[in-house]
Image (cartoon, rainbow, N blue to C red; front, side, top):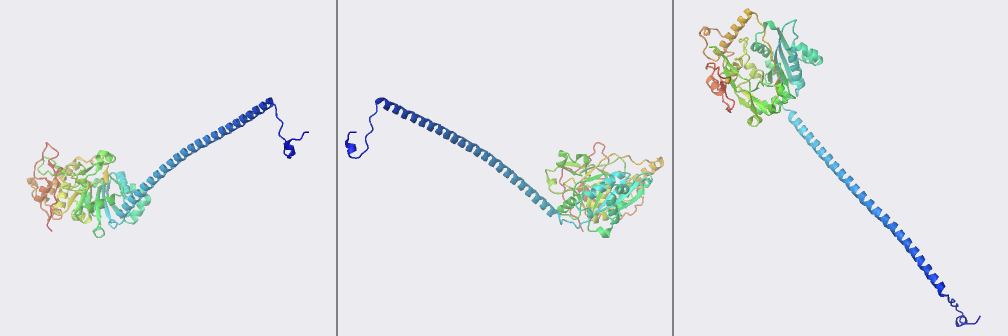
Length: 452
């Protein structure tokens, strides 16, 4: 092999020159490899972009989901916090109410007076409700006078003990329940039976406490005893008597009736008789939007269906037992004695009691008994007028008055003041054109001071 300069220097020989065709093939191979590499790069880039896009979209969806979950959690937390706040507020309110109730005259006892004429089940129901619905049942002392036909009718206490045997035994054993009964054949009317049940109140035991005189048809609301005490003390008059003929039980859930209260404020002369007496009308509904909403309102009448006050008032102004069989006039007569003795009447602002008003037939009487009954009524009416210093028919002017001093007008206010305050003139004749002969419903009565 011939020696070349490269070989002489010991350097590698240059590659032999290739043909143009071989060079073209090599170039084509390079281009093919480049395309393959570029394709692989593009495919890998596409895969990477796809994965990146999936990751981005997945992250966005997850973020949105997380935000939705977080928003829901926040809303639930807010609702829970609001509910907890409401619960705390209610608990605070209830605790405050209990604190106000606890210790509020809990030492005060209430004597519950009830008369019953041949309606044992209504009477027993009233006893049960009065005990169960009381805030402090232990302070309620029941005194019941029952008139029924022996051997024919059940008595009030018998039905009560059948329905509430354990409670009945406990109340009788503790003397929380005392009762008396009389055969209905000897019934002499409401004034006499009320006098008898009032005689069952122990003056020494209850002198500084309260009484409630109620009809056996009444229904009681929750904590009625506490509400009556609160209303009475809110007046600020230790000679106050709360009283009104209660609303009917059918109106208990009536919205219109609930937004109003009752006021005893109208009356009339009851007949054309020269010995007629004053009859109080049913109470009037008055809206609570005025002062009646805030405190018991002074009124000029009361109702024997329900009155509440200090026992001293009850024992000082007893129901007159010498007025048998009368059905009207006795409330005005006793109201006159109450007021002239310094006591005042107030209408409660809340519906604490309701009444089950039902028609009941009058006791059947023989013709001779009917005549005696009518004579008793006329005599009772004349007694009322004489005790009030009113004129009577000429034939009655000389009739003796039993226990006149005990059932006469009081000495702290006089009859003229009473007529002016009540707007009732008992000397006027019967007015057949109207039931509302004397009205004071739209007037604001002013307290009349009395002398000691």
